[in-house]
Image 1 (tube, rainbow, N blue to C red):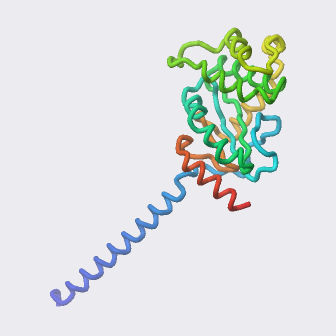
Image 2: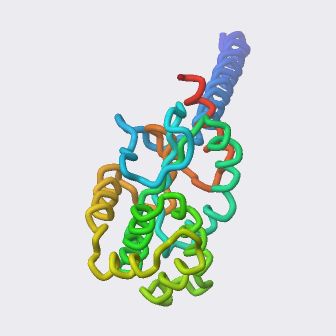
Image 3: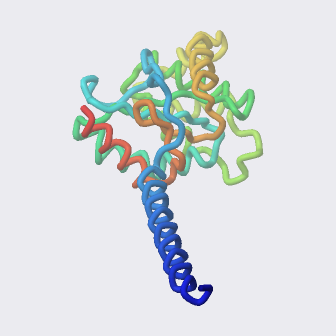
Length: 224
């Protein structure tokens, strides 16, 4: 009897192995297809009053939570921001907004105050100022480099900025409410790393995976 049962047991084992492999393949497939996604929230970050590029009627919103003192943010700005603008912002599909993060203390706060002050003074000059400020970030990012003098030097190199007005705004911390608003958004969305990229309500797991960002945008476009 034992000998007669052996082929049945072997068949059952083989069947279970096959089922296990199929389940594993399905799980791997599902994980890969969703690997671009991190946490999904009920709402998108509010971009009211935030520096924003693109058509206000664009169907998809992309937000970067960034810190001017963060070397990874500089790398993202240098390598991925231009591609995102070319692929999706300039084509009217996406708006792109920047929200300040203050993970590096006083220098992050000062840089954010400067950026917000420039944006209030001349929104068209904001993105050039942002790029120029990132360009000043030294390779030794732990050293102090964000100073009022450096900010004014950078602002002087960007057309459309009144450096005297900017200096007064920094002295008075006139845009601190805007910086605090950003900090509240950082808390509300549990931002722990910079840069953090959100596509509508979804936080991208790896901000340096451009394909993941692209896929999330295209999925959001299909849903509209």
